[in-house]
Image (cartoon, rainbow, N blue to C red; front, side, top):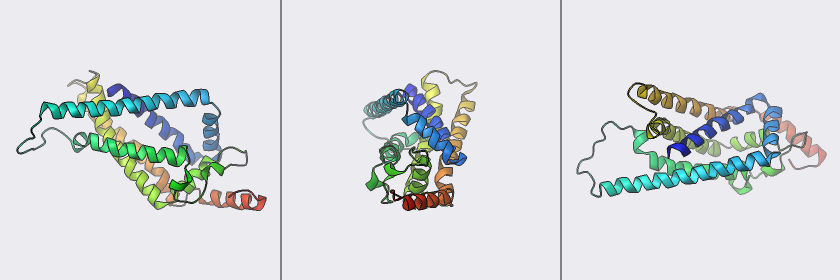
Length: 230
């Protein structure tokens, strides 16, 4: 649980760093995306490792949950949580919802399944003047839909709620947490979760506020004039 959690935590940070290149403009994020897509020998091993980590994380969570239930087959007559946070008590439930969110997010922006993006447009056909996949346009068009952005914000909120406890507990599981710096690790987990949340939701909120709209409209005019797909 802890080892796979570390891998996915690092991915969440790296993925955020890549996504925030949206604010550097179309050239930066399209170049970044083209680099990843042009190097499958790097991309696919990373995807396989992350997939294995996700599967193992889910398996470990289910196993621990069953062990906890087996340890107390009869529930408390009057249950009052002591010394636990809301995040720690909802780890399994938030994890399940996050898994659903991940599936949708992959279908939306990675597989680029048209019928679930709620725009009617085919993201696969988006190309920039350099004939690269236009990730900037895809993200702007994708997040202009308020329902998609709303679901994304909720998914990220649950992810960060999960991280606020998970990051701290993974240090404890690995034996790296003691009374001396335990409070620091707890605070670090909460601050990291808040910063990650703010970083991720900044993207859809900025797009809903109009960021990137002029680029998309200009791109549509150029492709329409050239007879290509908009």
